[in-house]
Image (cartoon, rainbow, N blue to C red; front, side, top):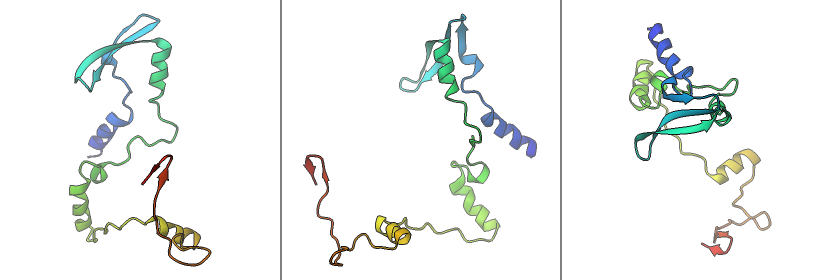
Length: 138
């Protein structure tokens, strides 16, 4: 089981930014490689100077400490909806209830201990009447 996990994760953790099979030609000055053009769904060739190619390639090297795989197994995005309820059931735990996100005013009240929707001068409720962006008015 562990050998399968290591081989599965290894394909994604240490995979290069471009496969060696996609590199077509290097003459000491220019690199030619092929890539999949997603707009036309066809393979195209692209030629760059060695410096340009290295500059683009280096962008794909992660920073030290950067996690390449965020979720794996039953937490992976593709299967989380199906498998996570089963995990909770096996652990005899209740699935967490999705909480409603805090509103702007609730966050301000919680962090700064004042209600931003109450006027600081007269204490009455503030009402949003309009929003103005540049010359337009809504």
